[in-house]
Length: 503
Ligand SMILES: Cc1cc2nc3c(=O)[nH]c(=O)nc-3n(C[C@H](O)[C@H](O)[C@H](O)COP(=O)(O)O)c2cc1C
Ligand code: SF4
Image (cartoon, rainbow, N blue to C red; front, side, top):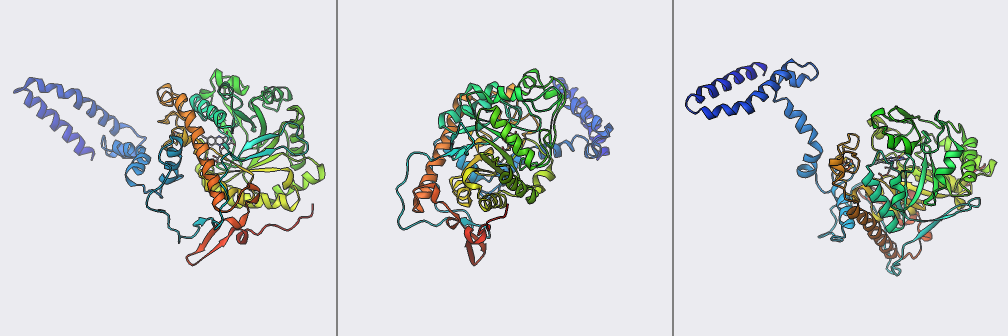
């Protein structure tokens, strides 16, 4: 291929020179041809890419096509039900709700209802009246002094930094308009989280951003400041996240701008680590003491923790410690291994951490078996996108749900899968002004609120069709799953629940 390149470069140049004796203007072709020849020679001489070295110029097509792969698959190859992580049907559902477009689907289901794992819910011959106002859930156990009334669907944790300024503003203003909460993510409370006026959950990660001492430890004083904003309604200690459980994070020096550094309470232009584990506690008892410390410092705001389930015994230990210390969190967020992230090693996203359904069953059953569930709200996250997903989570035993990527679709995310490159084409995760300007806050915040409102309306219609008038009646008999081509089981049969445990 190298020889063909060299020969054709000479041949083409010779033809142009020969023709220039007849038509001198043709020499202009060298403006195009010469840079291509130089590029090809450079490809032949460089030693990083064997394809480009062996196939000068033409080898570049591979990289170009590979970089366009997600778009090509999405536009030309993908069927309505085959795209990942979210298929076209799921994405279109969010887009149409967000834009208040067509709310119906023609001609019947596109799903294979005889396929293993197909799920459905039974309706009743006697449907209930559809409620038009949204259900709310009160979060705050006996020790909480500022209980919060939450929506059943909220914006999951995503930091300013992982998201652009315009994305944070749009989500926050949407949360304000739709009366649901917006989790700050572990990057701390930014001015953009405050500007929109939406309710916030302040997330405390291992980097203690917004509540850290100069040496990276937890600071009571800084925490009191961040937790004291009136917008902050609850505080969430992040133990782990489904997409990368047990893995920390790095804020590279280049991304640590003076603005980000100020928000996170770190030195600008230094590399800052979010270690895999917390420094403020090291076992179940000290975790619960930390919960109590944050409760006192925040003057009784609801305190919870978020985790992806890994080693089950560690969670059982926390339940036992709740009994022995008498300290209980107000909520626990269960994040499934299928959850999203801005950036994570592939092996962590693909192969570490329990998927949401198993984890939720385990957490709910553990809390019930220790008689703790009545005081602790359980929040589910991990590919919750439709009203049926919410019915399913609540039927298993969750009290409410968070959505990250569903909310991103509502502000224009097209699943281009470039969140870790600062070149997000829709400006959702890119800080470059040329991309960010595509995300017009005044337009997109309405869409987030629309997506939320329409989904909650369909949720009300779904449970009414099942003859249910209140979310307290949702239970595992309401979801069925096909276990093989000729039989199916209710979740009650698949997940019958745990016996009462000994503390
Ligand atoms: C861009 C992005 C950034 C995220 N940042 C955080 C974070 O700071 N803290 C956290 O606990 N989870 C973070 N997550 C995970 C989400 O909060 C959520 O747990 C997970 O995505 C599951 O929800 P989903 O399937 O609805 O996206 C992030 C997810 C995305 C997509
Ligand atoms: S559109 Fe942006 S936010 Fe959405 S997947 Fe692509 S890069 Fe990530």
